[in-house]
Image (cartoon, rainbow, N blue to C red; front, top):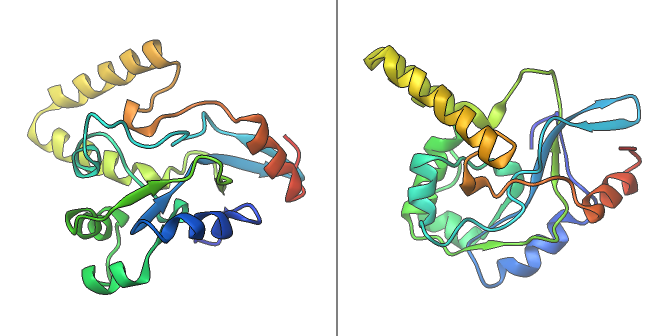
Length: 187
C-alpha cells in the first residue's frame, strides 16, 4: 500500500480466509478524499461484485478493467511460481499480467471492507492503463481519442458513471459506510 491508502481494520483477515482456495483475492474499493474527519467519495465504489463471467480476467484486464494491488491479497506459493513484484517495474499493469497469464484462480470477497484511496484531487492512480492506451491512440490517430470520449459519455448516460462494466461499480453500501465510521471518519 502507498502512504495515501487506508484499509478497514479487518480487511486482511477476511481476505485471507478465501485465500485458502484461491491464488488472488480482490475486493471492493473506493477513491475519495479526507478533509479533517470526513471522507468524501470521489465517485462510485468500484468492484462491488466479481468480474462478469462473460469474459475471463485476462480479457477484462487487457480491454476495459484495471486492478490495484491495494485491493488484492496473493497466495505466497503462487507468487513464487509466477515471480515476486519487481521493484524496478513502474506500472502495476506490467506486474499483474504475469499473474493473470499464470492462470491464477481468483476469488472475490464482497463483504470485505474497501480500501480507501485518498490524495490530491485529479490524481487517478488506477487509470494508468487508460492513460497509456489513450496516449497510444493519440499517437496513431486523434479520431480514437474522440471515440473514447464518446464511449465514456455513453457509459455515463447508461450507467450513471464513467466506469466500464467490468468494474461492477455502485454506491457505498451501508456496511461500507459503517466500516469507514469504525476507523474514525464520517461520511
